[in-house]
Image (cartoon, rainbow, N blue to C red; front, side, top):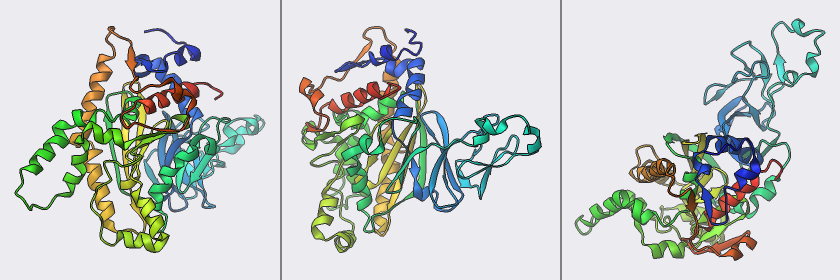
Length: 437
């Protein structure tokens, strides 16, 4: 294993146009560097405003491996703070969520901070007289993540003080978020049903790549979705189709289905499968839902919203969402070979509860620690994580349907089985590895 010693030029050389070096998945030093650069220079999803509806409500999470806390400030605004006491560095908010009242209190020395991070009180303050404490970093309190944007209640932050703007970073890709939100007759979502958390023994980027890998479902998921379809076909004629069959069956659609589905590429590593149709296109209609949408948007607009059935939208670096079923996943890096998955479900405010029931069923069947489909993928990740240590070939190929002309096309629609979106993600990875993108 070479020593990169913080040499970003050497690290960026690990990404070629159609292949990437195994060290991007296996080298702890590369992992440390991407936590310092990729996750600082990009806009990373933090949480949803519905998770903190009341003043003092908070939710703790990480950006890369750096702890932060999202909190509802006294003026009703959403703030994101570095979850670190400026005194000795202790994590201040330790629970996953809760209500802190008017201030946070460090459990070590009882320094207290308002919900905007400013110092509320320090025990025995006279001990800092004549010490120039007021000029220290500690006197500034819990440092805010100043570059924070709330987009239709979705909260994103960029740790780097300077860099690409929120608007330039996401651009047209926000249309996937818009579509998911607009599926509510009142244009509003709220987190519902809790969160499913589980670990994968692999590098976080493997999960991100897999979301636009359309050549694996009919192979890797034959043992799970394929078995469900086989069992269904054995049922007596006239047996009502269980909703689980609707969810499982499309995973083992043929290559031609996925080729025609299409993939859209956006700048900065974003993209989505399911341009013309997706595995969500043929779900049964929910009684009364279209009528609600029609009343809210008009028939033409309602039809346009519901006819958009994107499969997986990837928001680089580590967020992916499924608009048609209001599900969102975060792939949270823990170590070079360990990733925590958070699977969140959303309620369409004002829509029938049957939609939430379907989303919760989908999450249990597909994106849960007990999911047979998810374990198909997990086995592939773990096999790759182990076998990449082989010295037979240090490069991972991503050459399918490559055309050099794609380098001049930051936005495009392509064959649904191309690996262009994977190449797009690694071009973004290489770019944001720079300290000054």
